[in-house]
Image (cartoon, rainbow, N blue to C red; front, top):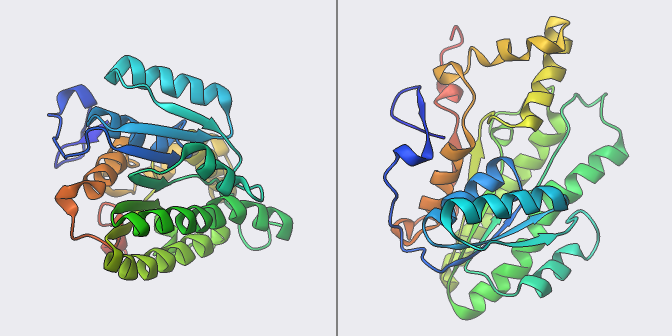
Length: 277
């Protein structure tokens, strides 16, 4: 879904397709088999780009590729890979080769306080969400700088800009990725490469439902009441994956050719809402 100026989502087939100069562009998307990653792949395919989907789940990859083919007539390449493993990013780059656009999106950092997450689980989560972003950027930035053009988009998360006690592992990783994006994107432009980030606020997905269920159990004593935690969000709902995806595709297009080193917060204004809201 994508949204009008108000709160009511509209479906993809209700929107007018944009023409963003992305026809034939090769786009590598990690965590691309579901959620925001799949929505980004769909949005790129709608513009005639060629998505390469990376995920640990072969079944989800197959379903995602079939859906893209059925919807847009685009044959998406799929790669099964666990980017948390040592050497996996280098192996992926060898398998896929050069790309026009890299979208770092993989990651599943658990919710919880500092007391809830063991050191081993903390490090495991950061290997995927933090270090795969860094490692893939290191590899592809070099390729892109050598040829003089390319775009890297980091899908990060609002917890980096608005840290929360109950999501401390993710907040710390996202804050690091924000600084990483800003620093790299500020210098990469000298060799023709743009690097930007997007911080989605809570976005509808199975993973987000799981995290909200955990919070509902802690705060309300009933995990099944998780939907109540979304009522005070802007527009009374979570963001839709398509709302993040279309922003990512637009920012990666030539129409946003002066955008680099910036991390965009997509939170419906929540960060600036009055305390009583």
